[in-house]
Length: 378
Ligand code: FES
Image (cartoon, rainbow, N blue to C red; front, side, top):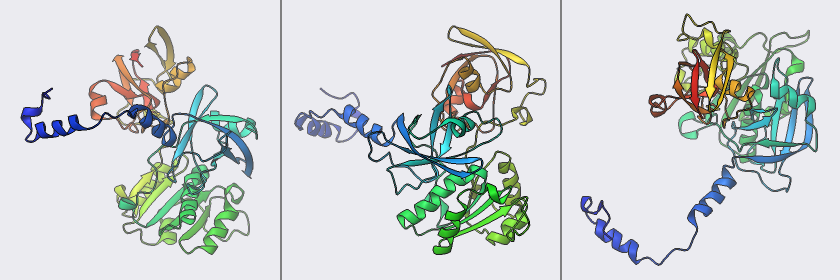
């Protein structure tokens, strides 16, 4: 049969004749493709906790393996898995290196109000099972654009993706220089201190500097915050180097000011996505007359409920037992998108919406806040 587009292309009839002449293919391509996708990008993984390592008084590393043994899907150092617990989910960076795929390590720190992280710290034990997504995220080294010399500013549990990158360099013998500048409140809070010290002493590609905010007597290293002066003193001229930043939310605007104050261009700074903004009403385009604490109505399917304006729609939906797919919870992956049929929503600056989504009324519910009564379509 003549293809409808055949008249538009020179040689189309000849190509069609060659296709028609091929022997029938009995391969089930969709099933084959599904198997490959499930191997490398599984939607869900069921993992056993095989070890719990106490790193500091507030931090544990959970070692996860397949119940049946064998390798886990490959990942890039810096990526996370989304952990499902307590009727919600949270992303946690993998701290182990991608050269060892028999396990993933998740290094979790207790944080004030940390619903999932504190639950894991308090209750997760060897022999328990966790459900996660496969590895995801874009916070990883790109050799083409990021070069072979990088600086990583970490704070608190922001060390987890840095540790994976360090282990990647060692495990894969990468030709890359990596300077970690790691800020902690007190020395006792420093995660992976002994391992980092040993690795940096043995490997000229690695340099590690700890910056302690409230050092005890006898601390001889740098102290205070990760100021521009401290960064410049430790790292020297940043020139074209890529700077990664990962840590508590407050670190991001602070680090950005320090780095741009040094004349470092914004496009050479990469931030790990790190949750919905704590105070969406502080963002410039939050409507002036909208009290963030006031409740508005949300209707979805046959359900209606009320929620404060400053609660992300994703959290508000989960409060009602409605669970859209989600992963990054930071506006980046677009898995949580919902369509706004009626009403007005504040999309946080963190939302990376595709133009076509925006035009069709979609928002990323993890960083979207109902300003008026809204009706949604999931
Ligand atoms: S969960 Fe990734 S954009 Fe919302």
